[in-house]
Structure formats: structure tokens, C-alpha cells
Length: 597
Image (tube, rainbow, N blue to C red; front, side):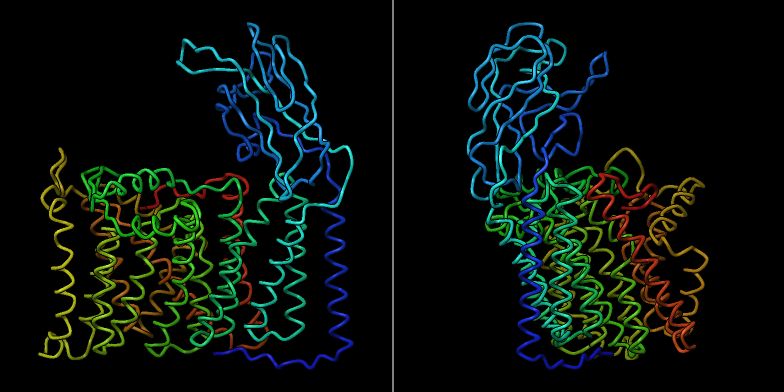
């Protein structure tokens, strides 16, 4: 199902008018940026955390004053400010029990009583970054052995005059608009679509500026840099996917890029992955750990994700490299679901709605916030394996085996899921157990033998902890499974999910039964072993496909049916977007209690 947009003829006058509107919008945006309010950093406010280094966690005095201790050398950084040679810093420092020598950028003082210091800053750099250093003598905290300097309450940057804003601001917004216009043109939207895309980018930059002026400068610059990925990806993929799906995919990808480039964003498990990356740099191929998976029993940490992200980090930096890999993987699952459904002769409208809902399911927001990087990087390959398995050609069989080996070098839980799904799809083939069927199994056997050495240590230690591998099924674990499915499939109610799945099994058993087999196997594994293999990331897309199938039937019933379909898709999109934005901008962890991860 492809959406074609008629190319619109634009006269020279109309093109001149569009250009004039763009220039006027840029001029207006420059005016907005030029009006700089007082930039204030309240040290105890966690929204200031991305802009300060060398400070300890916030504390509160007996009189209610909130502050942060410095550690001897602290830095406060303002971003997106005008290149003003005469900006003034105001720093409020709480009283100290003894005389402390302090050195600001251009001011040296002996501090003891609470004071507000004011001094001229160093010239702001051309890219709109202004830093202020606070150096102090330190003393040792006898209770915690911390090296403490002074207690800083707040810091403010005030501009004496308002010169032309930083060139980087204008160029970043212009780059964002150009990338949006190029994406719209590649999607065939015509000149009106190009203009709308440009206006949307300008509005987005303005909203960022209004909502968080301290973060806006660096945020827009970072977003402009990674936005290059979107038109490039659209250009590569437009031959294989419907324009409607590709438009939704590009929009969600842009939202994810927006999120990970926010200064405050850091995936929950990022520090864990960073530590593992450092360990893998020593040259080892696998490591053992005791994560929550496998009931805290010893597990194997596999190397491939860390090898690839380490290579990308040389170019992009570690934070961006790791998070970029998982957002590209997670958003691409919807595209692979569409290919899979198309392969098994799904009706085009049902396949499109199913893929859209996969793209929008709120579980994806939780995945990205909690930064399950290994799993998601391998998870997209599991769907690629399922698609290739349904093709059944010699080339696809060997490629599926290679991808299964790649998954086996990335994440152990996803290896189990991919292997079971592959096996279920093979058992559903019409020529199963015939000689040709067995020959098609040979590549996977070869791949399994090739990666077996990675698992030898793990296989020798399964169940080696104090607890038994198989445990009795209890009411507690059944309740946990119930909560997990409720959270993982939200906002689709469990009853509606079961009904939709029943309809899908009845109408399209070739798709639903092997997919459901994966869920059944690992729900049983969870109940018996507490292994916590993240199979809900597999069942959530299946429920989305089932709901897409059901609501596509309603589409035929005139405007009322189409309105209902639109409401379903909009509701899922709203819940997912709200969850993701709250996690990125409000530091609100997505609800995940009871969710097997």
C-alpha cells in the first residue's frame, strides 16, 4: 500500500514567496534567540546537573537552604548563549566554618561568610559556550572522607548587552530545516510538504528555546548533527517500504534522536554498559556476571555489541554510539514486521496498521530509557531471521544462519528467543522432515557449532549457584507474570489482547502460531527458572499486529470506522510519546514493575 502524492507545479513567484517566508521565519527566530533572559543555575535543582561538573550531590541545610559542595575544582557551563565579551557571573556561596581561598575566572577571594560574588566572565566562545571555574582549597569530611571545598547555592549569567546571537544557533536551525525539507522531498511530499517540514523544524527549535533556554543551544546543535541520519535512511529504504510507513518511521526516529541528544538523557543501564565496554577493551571475548537474568546465577556477557559500539565511539563518542545503535535497531523492528507480514500475504492495510502499532507501542519507550542495549541490538536481528526463514531460498537460509550466529555473539536471552522462533517457523513449513528440509537446517547447525565455544563456560556453570535451576511454580511468580503482561502490552488491555490474538490465530495461523510458540516457551521458562528472558519484547509486536488486523476490518465501514482506527493509533502514539518525553525531559522512569527484562 503506497501513498502517492501528486507533484505540485510551483511558479517562480511562488518559489520566491516560499524563500521569503523561510528568510522571515529565520529572522524571527533570530529575534527570539537574541532576547536572552538571566541564565540561572540553582545547584540543588537536578535540571542544572547537565551543566555542572566537580560538584557533589545536592544537600539541604537545617534552615532549608539547598546547595552542592564543590570538590576543589568545579565548573558551571552555559550553552547557547550570545558571544558577549562582557557577560557577568553572579555566584552565591554559603557560609564556611573556616576561611577558604577561592579563585573564580577573574576573581580571587578569601571566603567565610555567605556572599554573592559578581565578576566579569571570560569572552563567550563563538559557538555560544561560556564556562566558569571555581577553584578552592579543600578539607576532608571526617564522616565520608570527601574532599570538600565550598557550598554553592546558585550561579547566574547576565548579559550586559544583546549582540547578534551565535552563528551556531542559526546554522544549526538551518541544518535542521534543510534535513527536514530533504526528507519531505524524498518522501514525495511536493513543495507544500517541504515548506511544512521547514516550518515544523523552526517551531520545534523555538519550543526548545522557550521550554529550556539553558539546554537549547547545545541540544539544537546536537540534534542538527544527528538529523543527517534521517534523510539518508529514507533515501536508502524508500524503494522497499510504503511512503506512509516510512514517514511514520522517520518521525519516530527523529523523536528518538531528539531524546538521546537531550543533555539530561542517559539510559538507566548506560553506566553498566560503559563498564563492560572498558573490560572488553582489555582483549577478552566473553565475561561472566551475575545479573538479574537467570535468577542471579552466573551468566555470560557476549562481546559483539561492545566491539561494534567501541568502533563507532571512535567517530561519534561512546554515549552517542551506544544509544544510536539501540534507537536505530528498535525503530527498525516495525519495518521488518511489515516485510514479514507482506511475505506471508497479509492484506496491505492490515500489515501497514500492524507495523505502525509496532512502531508506536509504549514498551519501546521503556526499552530505550532503561537502555537494554545488547538485547535490542540483537532483537532486530531476530525479526530479520524470522523474515528470512519464511522466504526459504538458499540465500536467505544461509543469511538467517549468519544472523543467528551474530545474535549468539550479542545476547544470550535473545539467542534463545531467535532459536525457538526459527525452529517454530521451520516446523510450520509444508515439507518438514523431508530431505530438502533437513538440508535447509544445515547452515544453522554450522552456525551453532561455530559460536559454541563462547558458551562453554556458561553451560558448565548453569545452576552452579546455591538455588536449583528448576523451581516449583508459585502464586508469586504467576502474579509477576500477570503484571508483566499488563505492563508490557499497555495500553492494550489483556482481554482485548487475548481476543485479538485469537482472531489472528484463526485468520492467519501461519503467522500467529510460531510467534505465539515463542511466548509460550519463555513464559514457561520464566515460571520454572525465574530466568527473566525478555520475551515480552517479542509478544508486544505480535499483539500490535493482531490489533492492526482487527481494526483494519473496521476501516471498511465508512467514516465512523476510519475514525475509530485513527483514534486507536493516536491513543497508542500519545501514550508512548508521553512516556518517552517524561523519561527524557522529566527524569520520570517508565513504569516497569514486574516487567521481565
